[in-house]
Length: 437
Image 1 (cartoon, helix red, strand yellow):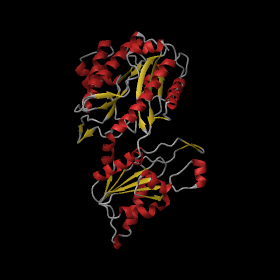
Image 2: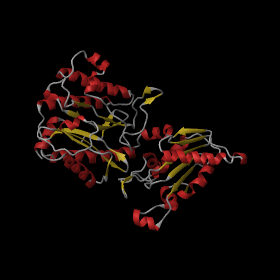
Image 3: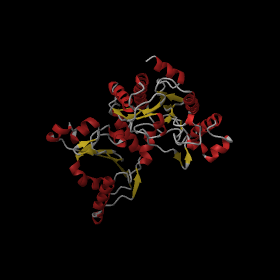
């Protein structure tokens, strides 16, 4: 499933319309990354570049220049039969114009000749400042080239501006086509989680569950994961970014799986926690039900106009109240919140933007204030509690329990649409699913 190529032309046109007169924006493609020796990691395009081009070759540069006749220019690798035999087909400049709809395209070897002319005399030069050292150096060189021709009438750009200010705000709001693509990715991931619950057995290794997740996604049409999956059994679930996934699964373990595929570079992101043997212990269920209460309550709050931080604060209050009821915290709830006592067990925020990046772009504050939710935003809602195995301030029966429940939620005009609701999270439903596997 892919977006129609015409969408990328529409996005470039929309961005060009937002850019100030007499400005230029530069967005660079990703490069291949070496793994070791002659091996490279699987290529993943820079999200900004792909958002505007749909072009999946490395090392290119997109140039946007508004005006009476707006211009989009792409610099790319040339057609090269010998290299194509080894590494695959290239579009070349001709293919970029014919198939990707840019106004002009050049081979990369022409970039140092063409770029000084394209930025000569502009008032603002937009690009991702200080994000890619190689691009910073080339921009500096192009500006120096223009400066050398000042006596001949050339003029260096008057200001350098971070491209994020315009581009990332566009990416924050998803179109209907983007939402449906993300919903498809979320459904594939949801069914992968269901399959992992059904096929889990005590004595398996964590990476065998990871293989089940990835296999299901690939069979369903999603070649890549949006991030390295977390498959954490037992106390490993208390390590927030645990990705070793190499420990055996023991009887009585809870298993936390945080995994989601991507489709056409759009991410899904799901976390579910379930008992390895198919049955929650009393302590596991108590923690799980508290996290679930926060997850459901926060999703119900999602609607346009809700302050982003208010969503997090709601999760903090629910979890803190529950921790007091369970005896894991003691004292006045408001005082515990004010002091941050809950952070021993809940150390992250309620969620993050989701889109082409799993932690997607877009500001959380506007003019220094937490922003309100608006239709078209997609956020995760992911409360969690993590009781360290060596936390001797709590009874031994609680130690080593880690629970997170995460859903992908679209803000609609009237409330929320949960993109990940087909994977169960009610503990009775999880136990029934595993019992019938």
